[in-house]
Length: 399
Length: 194
Image (cartoon, rainbow over all chains, first blue to last red; front, side):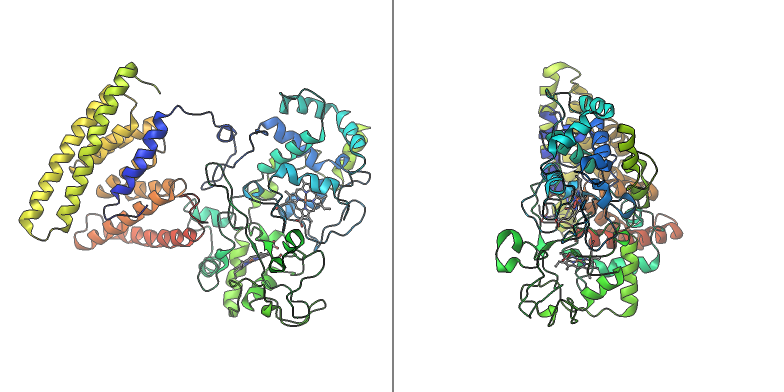
């Protein structure tokens, strides 16, 4: 729509659309009916038709998320690697599974994951939270939760729990059989869809018109972040700071993957094994090193950074971009990563001065949502004890 | 749909509404011609034409709201015409009615905010902007342009106190900057909000 002199034609065209909508019989809109408690400016999430939201399902998903009985033998829950106080990351460079295996990549934040068009660091094909939940449960390389081969055992444990029996009946009124893995995945997905973070200082400034929410330094950093020169918002776009978002009523979004010049092994653009990005799915050389843009919300709580945790601090992350890629020789790399042939054109030497680096860091810090990381709706339902311990107590109680 | 008088009322309402919209478009066109005209006599003529069209449109909108009491689109159009005819208080009443029937209805929020501006009720105009910013970004952008135009007019003939004016000017500057920054957040125009 072209803006016109009076602007009124735009309005007229809009009005026509509204009129049609008003005259058409209002269709029941399941996604809109759920009480999302959306922060101002956030769109209504899209929900798969075969897994409608309801409060019981969310509650069942929350229990499962924190429940170590969902793992094979050792006490690992989703929450072992996705801790609320760390915006649902684990504080490690690379995640560690139930049997001590080191994951090749870093645990990702789950803030606003409901809007992600694809899930994981570099997986264009996993598009629903229902499908994603199977990965940590069944992964064998590395073992994350170790459910593969002991599915019936794990399910028997859950079915024996009267809380799950009650929640299952209320959450899936249409289900005819007993609790199955499908329901586990659906409930986990429903819970994760509620993990919406939009109450940072940045949000208070932008969406609530609270001019005092952000200090002058963070505000300078914000200006820089969105500037053409820094170009951060080219990739860290949208209210999620993570690129295209999927939501109710919008055209299907496609995830975008970028090579930010973290590695350039042998000067040939190669990345280390297990961290080669989209290439590991497609086998195409141009996909080496391409990863999905992670959210920057709560980023001050999610160190260390990047898909392999190889960047220790926010300052180091900003310097990475200032240099236009990792341009030092490190233990794994040889040659200037900045000359990586597959690197995105939007990552090139910028040369921030010290005050600019400080300002950008201050801006990134203003994206922390303290209400999100302490919201009782997302907390461990087995009690106030740390995530690692409380589920064990639940096991003892269940026995 | 809450048709006060059954589907006969609905049909009558739709008929009057359609007529009203036609006159309103003509009024807007005449207003545009008046704005573009340099000859004062011609301009006055276009202006008169426009006023005539808005009066006709207003009559039709009123018939539409009588035929269908909860027709918020028609109350909204009614408010628009009253505003164009210079009756800002009446316009506010119409917009209030539209918004009572359909809370948050973006065009009414925007039009009402313009009426607030004309009446110097700046705080209310600002609140309306934020409501639109969080719901319909393109309409929020439109209101911001209107606010800048209003400010430009105030430089020549101020109608609100200087301190209020300068605070408002600062606010408009800041919100324009934020709007520009977050406009860069819109991926592929997937939706007007982003």
